[in-house]
Image 1 (cartoon, rainbow, N blue to C red):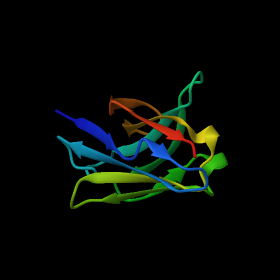
Image 2: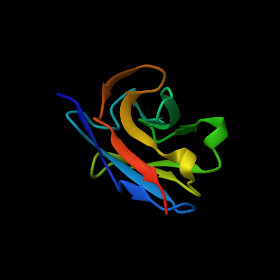
Image 3: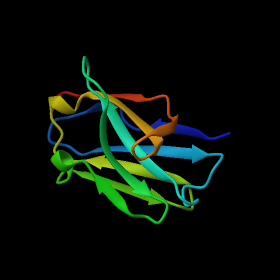
Image 4: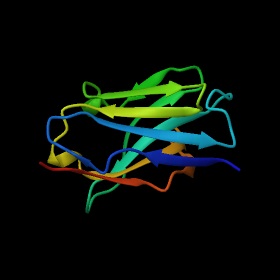
Length: 117
């Protein structure tokens, strides 16, 4: 069974870099033809796709976040990571990792990240 689990700090200070990891089990992140995404939901708002990494290691980002977002992977640990730089209060959200690029069939449970000094 495919499972995803996010991990990372729940509190980040403004201007710092947020780093979250998604540990995947039940399938290799290099298996054809899967993509692995980061999605967030700010309080009171809808889901927002942030970026993804593909089975070949290719990366894709939402245009408005492209300069601040980086998605990478560690195939030896079967996990992928989100880094979001220069965070501000607007980056407070529940962050999810999921399998897919436009549609998602497996999700992590989500992790709350609050940006505050």
